[in-house]
Length: 70
Image (cartoon, rainbow, N blue to C red; front, side, top):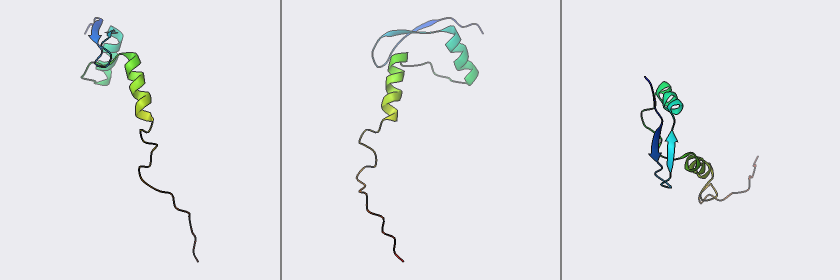
């Protein structure tokens, strides 16, 4: 199948970005069914935010000293 570049509007920032024929071929080879919804900058921003804990991690857990008893 021959792919052609497509212009897509980013769901996050509204900017136009190009889904290249090479990217489409890659998606097809990997079995991805959906086209990208975000531009490269927004995808990278989302990845950075995803890997960063939003509340400092650990929730309400309090650390307790470890007491070894014998």
